[in-house]
Length: 333
Image 1: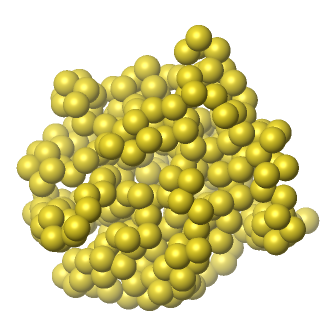
Image 2: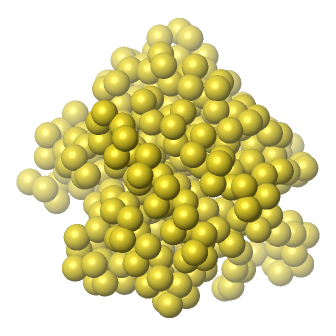
């Protein structure tokens, strides 16, 4: 029986083969909505629809173009780190089918900034692509800023927006970078660097669902003070509350970030809270537990401008975006 990670690799092989044989236009005929009712503009970027692929699926910018052919309006690549790294030891990806969830402790496994840039240089600009950036595992927190600067400067010319990821639970002590002082240092520096660029691109901060309300308020203060364009709510959680999967089995998977249906309610709650606190003026990309059209609608109604999927796509398959877009299209008419 295939492990979840090997199954993931097989899917990527199939996508690469489809890419090699130039099947994109054929796939697009079946899956892409091509409906002006679905178009939206967020942070100055024109999106063909509101459904995207979250970071973590296409870490190395290998198949983002092909994923776009399945009806997704944008794809976020990464998390990208300055240097290539293998990530955490295997096994590190686990399915919880009874909960429609995944636990992963991949650990920012990626080929590094230079290789990702080489692939992005060849991309078709018709697809909106975001770049999710992080620090190398071996980089101590006191030097983390340098990693974020390197990735920001390296990716800036080749993606449409940047996402600062300080909330992944699978990198040792990364969560400490969410503290107000550390976050101020990272976001303040990146905002200053953006001012030196010849053209403006949006910056988003991806936050943890495990922040308490005081921490959310402090994060929003830093985000607004440094003119960060939006929030991605949310990353995976370290909590294991309310799972149907037997506790002993969950415990055998050990630590890691939980994603999927168990995160749906909390991520929506965060979206609703942030929307209220900012009077709906801060764009939010909603992530967490989206499987069906109703899940996407729930997040959009809570205040999200866009939504992204990851675990839902793993479970629901390639027709997911088409199904959600078809429902959203009907609501727009």
